[in-house]
Length: 114
Length: 115
Image (cartoon, rainbow over all chains, first blue to last red; front, side):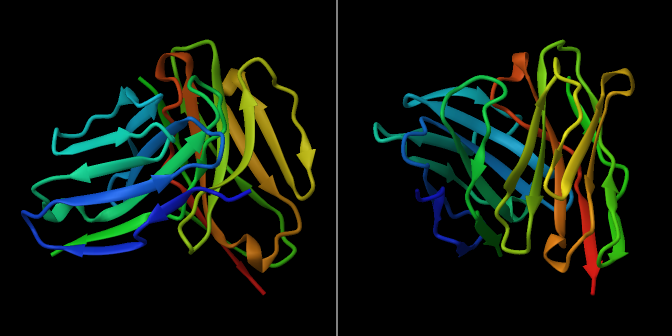
């Protein structure tokens, strides 16, 4: 069974641009969550999608948005990029919503903002 | 609010030594789950173990074992007879009923196993 796939693996953007990251969950998994990992702040929750609806949201500005498609694939978008958005963005999928579900992570997209 | 603290930032051991990683958590929920994940240099977080708040039985799975103590809000993880391939960053995480699938992670502990 294929794992969580994130594309692209690496991105270089400049300040002010926008970026879209993609995540394909494990087959059969319906919940997709996104996390940001930085050396200073560690791993922080961005948002969770289930059945094409955002179910939970972390403490990030509105420049960070996402969506989920009917096949459970998800995208996240960051608009008006700032230097501080440089990070590893990790996507995780799980079978369902709710606490206790094991989340399986992809290898991440490393975003560098210059 | 939830919080996970991993006081050890880095541990260095020689191969075959045991390694114990400390994790202390805070939550107001009475129902919660605790996890350990491993992050090798490739970046992917690999699920290791999960425990719920109602099950304090400590177990051993291969070279991994864990010690869950609600009285001290600790969920420690031990690698027995460490190997070079165990070198990675290890994260403790918490999810609670109020937070749903959202994982709150500790800062991570980097483990370096030297041959």
